[in-house]
Image (cartoon, rainbow, N blue to C red):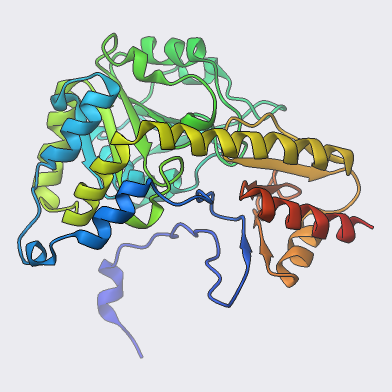
Length: 352
């Protein structure tokens, strides 16, 4: 059958997320979710929420959540933009700010959605190679461009870039917007938020999916100069004014208020990460320096794909990327102590 209308269809290779197993009991270490539940008050509010409000549209300006985030990060509400997960915030940012004939720059090994959005929105781009240690080369981002996006810490490498190097890039590109994607910054590294008031071309993007245990609620936000936020809101208002649902606004706001629980769970994950790294190094793994809630590892003798397949056969899911330069690495999310103990036990049996 000939579909004559196909010539007008926008073709793009979609982003492929980590596998979401649906069978019984598994150990899921492949999508960088937080292994701990959200703050206790979030659970209480979810049970007591007035469902009659669901018939009403949510606040299109997401005022409650913007105000809570502004207070927490010591900025003005006018400096905050909220979206449906950081993916929504980043996609809206690509659409808003990357509108030049010059190419947007981002690393060749990074969050693979950047390439998808650039293709989808027909934005020219160049993927700059990391060095042999999987680190960003600052000088590669001090060339003419139509925008820059850098994940810091980077994914899937887990490596954090020093703030002084981030500032070199931001200061050298005053004619383009520099987006720093800080999905994992709560687990290590230096945030670029301290530079927002200094540079009007800097947008810092965060998510509730990792450190705040709310991946299922889809909450992300950006902090930047007031004019950047106005531009984002104008595009959002031209596309979909009601992006954030009411439960996410209410529960997300409550999550930010429990800072003690937030820091407690981060501390647990970081401690478990370091114990896991030490144990895996004894098994012959080389592991990149991690500032995230995952580790990026390769074994001295056993191929990554073999380990991935063997673990999956035993209902333990990690992430394998069949891509050049990283096809012998595994990305392993940090679970609870019990989950990581089981993972290490199975790993040891595979290596034997």
